[in-house]
Image (tube, rainbow, N blue to C red):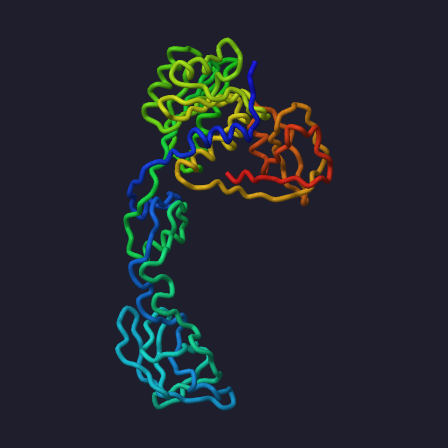
Length: 403
């Protein structure tokens, strides 16, 4: 009989045993850096931009020259020249003068504001008419306004977004220090399994759902999956695959063979090669999950049922992968009333898929072997182990299943 532990206790055990493990730093090109986790602080080494520039097509002016102007009484200023994109503007403007500057161009020395060309008119004889007053610094970006030498631009531990790639490019950085992706081995076990792309030759055979599903889950969580295929229910074969995988990976997921059937030998194999830390979690789905350690590396015995494997990964493996990368898990959540009463009598914490519709959370009847019940859901709610029911209209927290 399994000696199950509560979800919170299991999560704490994982943090205590493996929470200090981190992957090493590697350097990748800027083109490869998207969604990678920065391993070092990025500090500015220069002023960006390195000149004062205009944010509009228009004219550089002195503010006091336009104090009393209006549509009925425009002010005419002498046009002194033009700024050219990509070139240093060497002249300056004084009182009574203006200069044309395109969007992004360097403003001449002495500029206090930029006036959009739409708010001006041709005054003839190299003059420009201005029809409204302005405030200082209008329509301008100043030297170092984006970043200055010595300032923190992007902190270590951030998963780089598209805008971060632009920021790094603006700094001239084409090599980026990032955490190495955790290498995660995936093994599926069972005489009944065939690869997803093959036909079912006879009744009793099923396609391997967990290998492709867990592979994608690993990638979304920042890891790199290494697939070791389907292994029959044969002890030497399973043991050999685990030994090969653990030598090459930072973390190992073995799907199937975790319950109490005579063929479910994974517990004894992990004990032989290392240590079983947890066997059994007070949760539905995912009760027979195994957590072990071989050669100092975490090993998860995932239930063969896809829904159980999905939630086991989401609850326990995903946070550990984030920990390897020194990042935090951030879940998107919403609170909604329950559309109908949900009854449970399992004495376990339960993860219940829900569909959000018409402002309410609709529970989805779920069984561990039916992955479509999760596929159709928007998210899930957690029912504590000491609750027998959640009443219609009761507010529940829904954690989105974004991927």
